[in-house]
Image 1: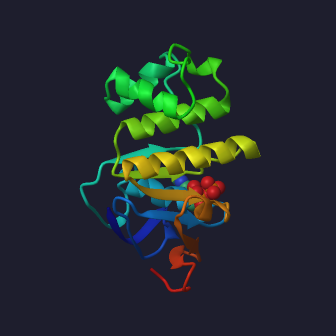
Image 2 (image 1 turned 45 degrees about the vertical axis):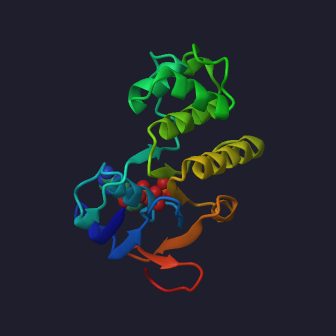
Length: 202
Ligand SMILES: Nc1ncnc2c1ncn2[C@@H]1O[C@H](COP(=O)(O)OP(=O)(O)OP(=O)(O)O)[C@@H](O)[C@H]1O
């Protein structure tokens, strides 16, 4: 996946300026920046959810997105919340549910699960789609420290196993290192990317 963004505006206000970002299988990048800077906007463009930007998005990688809210189907049981959106078979879904510690909860509805469990289910669903690159938008926010740590560990394990790349959007400067991701900073007005290691624009 490669994005060469020239700019992104909302109602005439330019939020994102020129930037380039490339991520392939096995590569992990974390985009950091304060609230409102444009992190989610950038992720949504890369995910193909917002096509109103100037620039180009290329690559034929299979993408899966994990949002802060688990976005589950409330009227479907946990197992179907994996199989239906991911288009995978039941045994693959069961296997992934087991990997995220949700064995035995296949028949539960999302409302019967805690927020942490719902987030793990969303993680299983994302990996069930066998993505080349996983896009994550603040997936560990508003979880208690222990649950967040557990989910970070699971994410890292699943990335390792699957070989998928990662684009993580977060405001937490501690997360990139915990996921082995290269931190890049989104900043300025309009916002552009700066590599944290060498301070150069990307
Ligand atoms: N659909 C929209 N219409 C108008 N303005 C928008 C829209 N989506 C985002 N914005 C604006 O674009 C800017 C960037 O928003 P964005 O959600 O990308 O920031 P963020 O860095 O992800 O913030 P946070 O960390 O709080 O989620 C904000 O000023 C926001 O108000």
